[in-house]
Amino acid sequence: MARRVILLFLFLLFAIPHSAPCQENVSFGTNRDWRSSVISDPGISTKCKRLIFERNEKIKFKQKISALIIRNSELQREVPPNKISVKKKLVDNLKKLRREQKLVILKLRTMTENIIKKGCPGIEL
Image 1: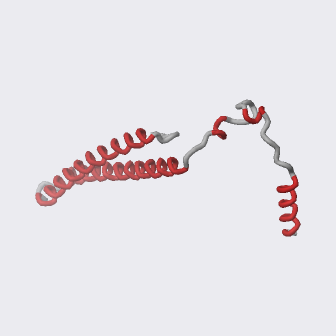
Image 2 (image 1 turned 90 degrees about the vertical axis):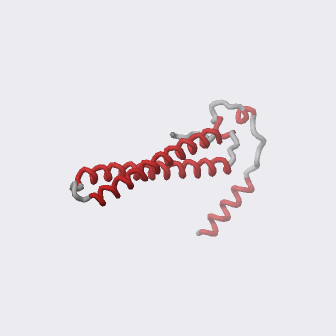
Image 3 (image 1 turned 90 degrees about the horizontal axis):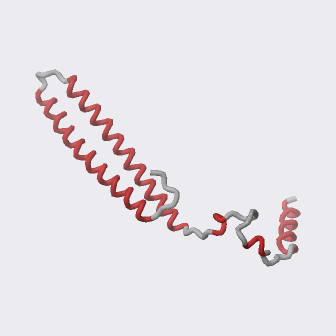
């Protein structure tokens, strides 16, 4: 059965003559879409996918830092006043988190600018 299918495929492949394209196939009429004639470089799309993936990962990281800042603020409100060392550690941690958040926002802005400069088609920012 499989042998018959292969033979039929080979027969159809070589038996049907290949004709030159007609004028109506070359024109961008109703038969062809303009996107099918555009040559796209797979290297560019791969690079764009990688850049967008890295940006999305950085956005997830930014959201995690924001959640940690909120959590830290809630913990600071709940810590009893006599726990001075815990309160100090939470304040120091909050400063580090805010610094990291500013850094992530800067990196995100730079990554977004790079994606736009690279000319990635169809980006959704």
